[in-house]
Amino acid sequence: MAVRKIIRMGHPTLRRPARRLMPNEIGSEDLRRLVADMCDTLHDYAGIGLAAPQIDEPIRLAIIEIEGGESRYGELANLPLTVFVNPEIEVMNPSCVGFWEGCLSVPGLRGFVERPQHVRITYQDLDGGSCQLELKGFFATVAQHEFDHLDGRLYIDHIDDWSLLMFEEEFQRYHLAPD
Image (cartoon, rainbow, N blue to C red):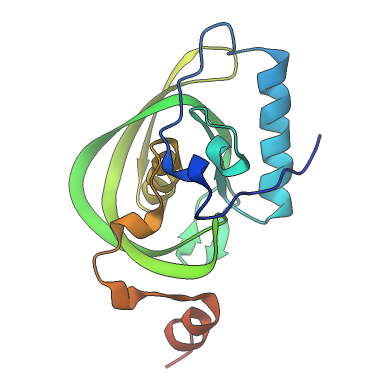
């Protein structure tokens, strides 16, 4: 459909809670077009997740798509494109693990964030069907990151040690460099 512009930190939409989608909006052609635009945008920006507020659409909608294989986070399973309408997240185990996170709305930076590693997501699909999905590990982190956008939060809000927020170039040079 169309690649949309991703808004960046500082834009007021990123700091406002998004509204729930109403039953008459779910399954609509407008919503399907928006999801198609979000997919095109996600692929164009080479991301793994995108929330509607990141393209200045303040609604509770997010997509995640992770191609399995070797990554800087280790070997990952495949998570096919999943569309989350009005998602709610429940922490199943509060035990946290940290990952270096980046964000298309906070370009050029990486930060170390610790998050719970087992969550349950209750959401609707594009047709309004009720769905539930349990995610663990890196996938749980990605979901929490994307759903934070729906509540007006960014990953930087979760950083405990500010010395672990850095520019991408320094992250690549000093934290991914071979010993």
